[in-house]
Image 1 (cartoon, rainbow, N blue to C red):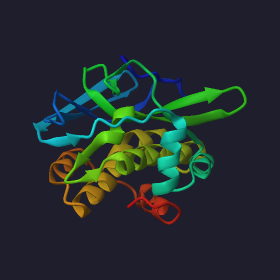
Image 2: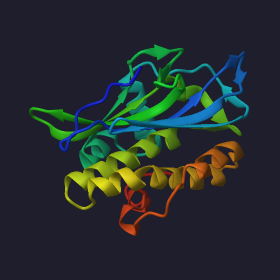
Image 3: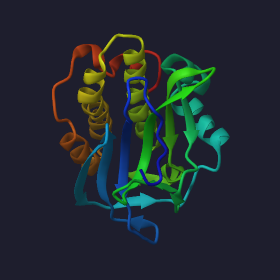
Image 4: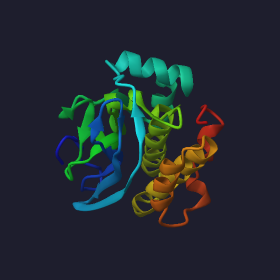
Length: 223
């Protein structure tokens, strides 16, 4: 997939969970078409929504240190999050265009969670965040926290799968709906109407209570 590197999962196939937008920038504001392109076992599902005005301050995360510092300040200790969720959170350096990862459908991507395997780390997930997320706002509210927590939910689910708490089929069927249920609640609480509408459109199925994002709120500041 162009602009996104994936890793082979333990049961075969490739898996990506993405939150992204297509951006046509004009000065300090731009009107994107918001979309998500998710690749699960070779099948691609793309969603394209109506345009809406966002504000881009032009800020970009410079490195992992800066990204982790914001996570520490707004969500919780980065090292603890990585250990708890069996993941690694990094600033993407993969095929960037104006600070954004690019999906195979040409859309800009906020964040992506991939499966990975290391000789010493074993099976885990990896969260990559586009540098451009730092400067993106709607209704005066930054999209940094919701982007990172959205991807944390995918990592949380993948770790549940690795620990035998959910099946791979459940992971594939429900993780996006759960992550977007969180995103919807977040956007509604801050009056981010377009983002809320987009999130709502991606909640495609009811999900098991055991896959709820709410346990994360007991350990991290997800709101």
